[in-house]
Length: 316
Ligand code: NAD
Ligand code: UDP
Image (cartoon, rainbow, N blue to C red; front, side, top):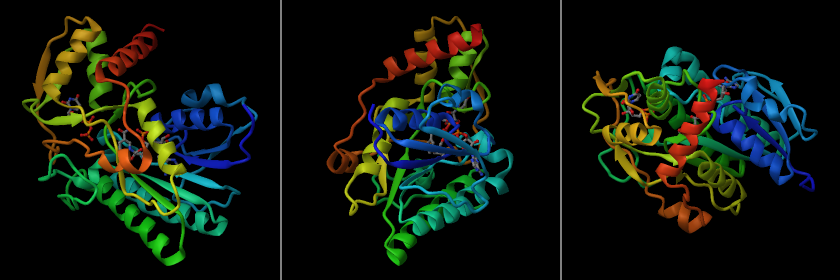
């Protein structure tokens, strides 16, 4: 691979999505600087990259200002699992808001293009379904999920104000539920929980009656979407939804995981967490039109790969 000459910063680069993104950027020929404070990420996720001549790791908290030479910035630093982001909610808001401010200031100083990993959570518990980008959402500002939802909404505001006020080149990508290899065993998100429970022969924990829906995107598709957004013409800022519109209930997901893993576990019901969105499905017309992007990996195929990953990890 010929070096691209591009120096790209990935914050949260040791996380689930960040590690896949760093790998994809290295494959493209970029010089990659991974910044992470290992709050949820680990060195294991990026271990294969550590010896690569175009990969650098900087242990740093994005709530503290940073000055490095970069051409492009992907801002992914933030815990994404509800279990993790609710563990220290004040810290989560600080990471979302101060992190965005510090990276935008860096982008402005370096005249770098910057992409924000935003989230479908900005739509809250939506009354519009599926969710298009022009829907403003229905978010509880004082609940348990608010640290993340409102933190990410404020970050979007900062991105657009930097764009309007300082002419900064921004990309805001609203990521919908993404799954795949390298999710953490203690992550607490539904796909990894169900797979690990199924493989261990433990009860599969469906919260509430399991009728709430989500739409799951395989990690490789998501990374392609992030790269397409970053490479899009300067005039395209987003926000743009990136996700897989194939929607299913959590009861349906439990059945799929049990079938694909060949597990004899049963599902049990546990209380639904507060403010848990009842439905979620991206409208991806904008991504299709402006980025020429759409997901390719069907749920069964992505789940089979993820199950194989966790099977190997748990047997190791
Ligand atoms: P993750 O928890 O696996 O990764 C987040 C990474 O950020 C970790 O490596 C963590 O150590 C690092 N981090 C956290 N706080 C930091 C700080 N203050 N300074 C430096 N590093 C810090 O989560 P993920 O699933 O890889 O998500 C990555 C990004 O994508 C997040 O911003 C998340 O909000 C967004 N996102 C993810 C999903 C999803 O389904 N995975 C959905 C919507 C949005
Ligand atoms: N969920 C579940 N069992 C679990 C973990 C989660 O039924 O063990 C449900 C959760 O209540 C939500 C959906 O699965 O309705 C997705 O949860 P996740 O934490 O993965 O992401 P969210 O989209 O809620 O941020």
